[in-house]
Image: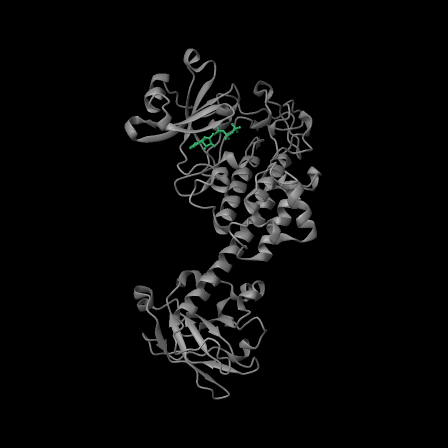
Length: 469
Ligand SMILES: Nc1ncnc2c1ncn2[C@@H]1O[C@H](COP(=O)(O)OP(=O)(O)OP(=O)(O)O)[C@@H](O)[C@H]1O
C-alpha cells in the first residue's frame, strides 16, 4: 500500500543534493536504449490470457503475471504501470542487482491508457514473502538475510551513482525480488526519480512505514530518503517484523527497534524464529548502521556507499563465524569414544585438515601422530573431515581470532602445520602455560611439522602460525 502517489509527469526536475549541476539536462529520450515493444496479442498469449495460473501477485497498480514469450525461450513478468517515467528510467539502467526491463506494450485500447511493462521474471518471489509468509519453507537464516541486505544496498548504490542519479523512492521488502540464483534484486521503479534534485518538483511519495519523515516537500528529496527506507528494510530483515504492524506496540519497527539499539538490547531485535546471529558483534554493528540510516536528520545518515561497505564487512564476519562453527562441529563429530571430551587432565590436539585428498574424498576420520609436549604428556590427535582448504588460505587468522574470542572460548585453536600447509584446529585443554609442540604425520608425505610454541602463548585467544598472514 502506498502512502502517497507520484505525479510522474512532473518527475523531471534536474538537481543533485550535494553537487548541484543545475544546467545539466537529463538524458534525452533518444539517448535511452531502444526498448522492445510487444503487441498486446502476444502478451495475452504469453500470459495465457492473464489466467489465474500465471498470476504472480498484486500490487497497487494491478496484478502481475508470468509471461512465456518467444515460444518458451523467454520467461518474463508482465505488470501494469501508471503513466510514469518507469520505462524511460529502466531503459537507461541495466544491472544484475535490478529487475531489468525487457520491453513494454502500449496498446491504448486494451490497456486502458496504461502501459504494460515486461520485466525479468523472478522465480523466488519477494523478500517480503520470504520474511513474512507462513507458506514458505521457513524464514531465511542470518547468512541469507545479510546477503540480501548487501545485494539491495548495492542495487541502491548503483542507482545513486548513475548519471544522472536515480532515487528509487519506494525501497521496501515487497519491491525486493529474489532471482533464480537466490540473489536479491530491486524492482518496481514506478515512483523512481531520475535527475538532479535541487529543483525537484516531484510531490513526496513512498510507502507508509518506509517513507522518510524529512521528505515533506518536493525540495526535500535526496538520496538520503532512499537510505532511510533502506534502514527500515534492514530492521525488518533483522527482526522479521513488518515495517508497520498494528499487532505490536509500538506498531512501527523504527519506534520499537531504535530504542532497543540505544539501550544496547540487541538480542531482543533478532528474529526469534532463527535465533541468535552467528556473530553478535557484527550484528550490533549492523543494527547501529540501521539506526544511523533512520535517524531523523537526513544529513547525519550514511551514504549508501558507506552502508554497502559496512554490510559487506558484517557479511564477512558472519561467514567467518559460521565457518568456525562448522569446523567445530566437524571436530566434535570426529571425536571418538576413545577421546574423552571432558578429560581436561591432559592436553590434546585435534586437527581438522583441509589439505588431505583422502579425507576430502571419503570424509573419513583418520588418526595422525599427535603432539609432543614439553611436559612429556602423551597426547593424541584426530584429523577429521575436510571443510575446504581454499577458504583457509584466505583467512587472516590473527584478526579472526581477535574478533571471535568466544569461538575459542572452549579451547579450540586454529593452526597451520608449516610444512604440509594444512590447517587444523588445536584443542588445548591443559594448563595454558604448557608449551606445546605439535608433531603431525601427514599420511601423504610423512612430514613432521612443528607449530611454534611461542605463538601458542601469544594470547589467551589462541595461537597462530605467523606464516598464515
Ligand atoms: N518480476 C517479477 N517476477 C516475479 N514476481 C513478481 C515480479 N514483479 C512482481 N512480482 C510479484 O507481484 C507482486 C506485486 O508486485 P508489484 O510490484 O506490482 O506490487 P508491490 O511492490 O507488492 O506493491 P506496490 O505496487 O504497492 O509497490 C510482488 O509482491 C511479487 O510477488
